[in-house]
Image (cartoon, rainbow, N blue to C red; front, top):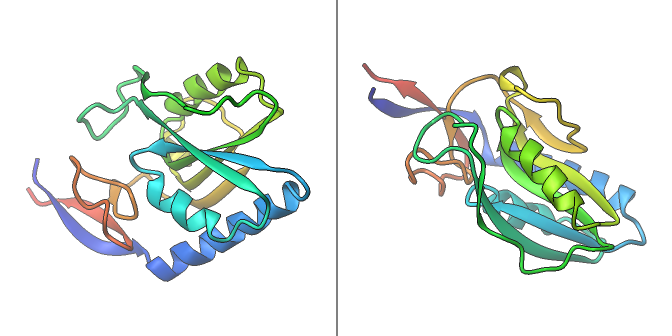
Length: 176
């Protein structure tokens, strides 16, 4: 299969407006509290960097690398933690930040794992959600944009390690 970069699905301007909206929801919900944002690498780093620029409450940032994809375009269902947190989350208000929720398997595995570390609260935040592909039920407290079941790249999302740097989100189309 030969995939090729196609049209812009979500512009950089729409992405920034989404970041402002999601940050406003978080600021309202966590007024007077400190938040620990846990970015899921590699994809969430751009969204998290943009999001926290609009966060007014005190916050910290840490990262985890969790994978259910390997080198494939679809989730394998096997979740592995490749890099764990360096921060103790006990008693903290934690928001897990993902680039995209596809099947939900990764977060369905990760959320109970982090709950065992006894945070004060644990919420999910995602830039994009492919609800049609969901295999498990998830409560996403902070959602940017719901998208159709299309393969997309840009704004942290990659195809085989490429295209993360694009400021807009693009469709990838089969050129065969």
